[in-house]
Image (tube, rainbow over all chains, first blue to last red; front, side, top):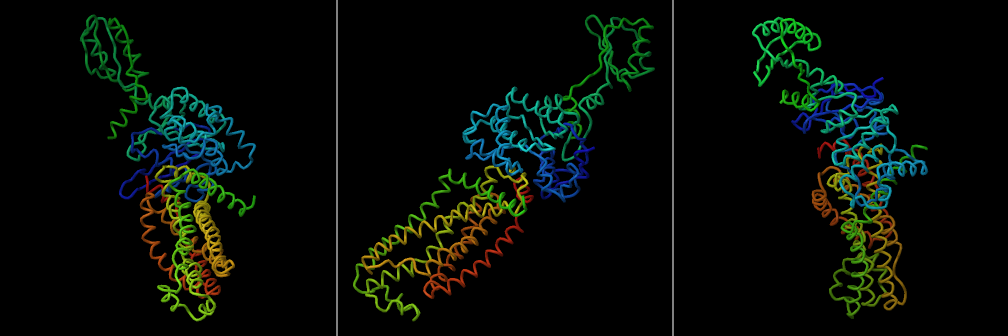
Length: 311
Length: 274
């Protein structure tokens, strides 16, 4: 079952269209990452899903509830880590968490205390519980903001750059929490610039630019789809007939003479089928093959290529 | 938990959170403390220094002439010093106690939503399941409480100072009389609620605190002038006139709260600062 269904969601701020007819589904118990440059519409999408702002058109369903018709129900079952920590600086850390826990309906005082203590200890903030938030560092505020979003154990958690100000250890802790939430059947939507987070925890990725979705899939799928078109075959000896052999299957783009070898740069339609055939035929024709390399990209390169193409 | 108790729980939650924050913010606290100190200490001293030292009414004669016969009857047996002291302390300064709640609450009410927008805390508040009316009522209640704290404490100090001085002039205390009790316990809260409702609505609509304060000043000054003249007459006319004026303001309170909640749309708040 899908925890989130987004149907042709759009949001206009005056003449600017921040989100443009966005549609996607997120199954229960998955981490769904939204990647995109600044101004892509990621934060607006999260704010709409958290019922902080309403869409200009379209609708979305969070755990079956409509954002346009049942916003209060959605607010009860979602938690959001906002771009700014959005904490009350004149209140202590514990007072902040008390307020939000009660606002989200954690009415049992003992349970509230237990959750606050457990999470503050996890994030190494318990000793500072009686200090005003105004005295906290940016990273500490971000950790507290994360605890605030999780304090009512929401079914869906929306994270807007949750690790941007955190040290590696704290980032690791936040990622662990995301994985734990996923294990508990909760759904996480993560908007981030940190591709490391996406590669480590996301099951699905949506690339956004100018309010629109450019690509969907798992990180591996996106990489796979972006790869496998180009390859390089390094041979010790080179003869013109090798080119003819390759041209019968793929396209030779360039032959580069190196110190003690030749690099044949080719482009194939299907890496997994075409490359073994080419290698086999080249070997029969007498080519001494030293190596075969696919043009493999990582997520960052995929991101840069897709975003670059859209600009 | 019933819906009603749930509603009050959330209203109290917003109230408590804001009250704790305000109690740690001197910039906001100053008007709440300074205003009552000024009105309750300085005004009686002015009365004491001015009219008691003269043997005739002097410049207050014109004021006395404008009083209706009903009011003049109450002052028939007073000598000039008593007359001057009574007119100024009981009639003339009464409207100030309707101004106190407006001044004391204006900073807090202007800061209610506009301050949260400026400090970027509004997003997390709007993400909670607290409803629009609960949020609005909670914010109103904070400003109203501050206003009433200022008014009541001013009233207590003022009454004490006036009565101490009155013992020497009349041989008995003169405040509070029925008009003053109605003024402080009924009319002042009603006026205060209307003002707070208007200011909180403005605060939700504008982008920042300064803008809220400016609009508030433009709207509140004409209201102040109106209140001043109406309440002065009402105090002179007595309890019935004050109760009628209170009912008028209760009506305004209802309209203000209804309009405020209707105009308050959380989605618009974030859209404005996005």
